[in-house]
Length: 381
Image (cartoon, rainbow, N blue to C red; front, side, top):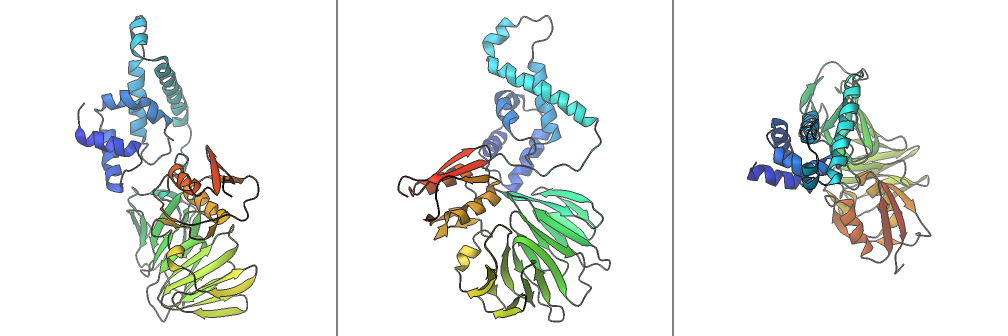
């Protein structure tokens, strides 16, 4: 088989560089068959891939197993010539494929359940994936390639977009670690949901206010409607707006809950405290104290722009970001309380590249084993 386009997409796939359009094209080409050379040459690589990766389809798995079984010696055949051509390790992978087929057959006869969210290999950057929880308990797994209509919403291109409707139910969009997604609410307001976050909202705004509940972090662009204020609730803070753009961070593992205004006007409430903040200001709760400050907007919004902005950040603050984006678990060794790092790094880097960049400061050293990331002091701490 000689197909320059397929060869290019294959290399992009191996390097985890496929765009959304290339991923869809590659998936279609693989499902279409006729790529035996590729299957033979790369069977070991593909069997190492996490089978819940978005590009791992049942069709591709079936092709892989079929191709492997066809290459096993048939009964009565002489095996010596085959052994000279095929390393022993290749037989190990073939045996693994046979075992996978047996497991797959057992699975096929089990009652079908909602499939799990795609889990990336350790260190892969996050991508568009989420769980859409509908009013009657139904759950739909979403990724960049999801395209469907459900209730009064359309899902496409990493976004759930609602249309105005008369009936009201409540949906929740939930992103796992290593995932992001967008939602256009029924009033046209747009929400960018960061990793390890959730947004609970009605499918129609038929009340005097437009209320949603957030855990984690999100950026909001709210459609102006003076008759129906928009309210974001986080448990500790309440943000009331008419039409504006702002960021809310309310992760349970962070030391503060913060609302940062980009444009427009919002009123932030916490208990009996209320504060109207201006563009460029941030209001939040830190150790039960209500604080208004002027943060670095580029740093606050870096996640939405696909960047890590680490300027002056404490090592544990940085590691919490990495935990959510790369789906790793962090373990600390020795005292790291005085370590701060700076830099602006693309979120498209895999975790190994990012850790190498951080290690160049000499302040920290990392050990990554599976999904466990151990952080140690560097040589120049």
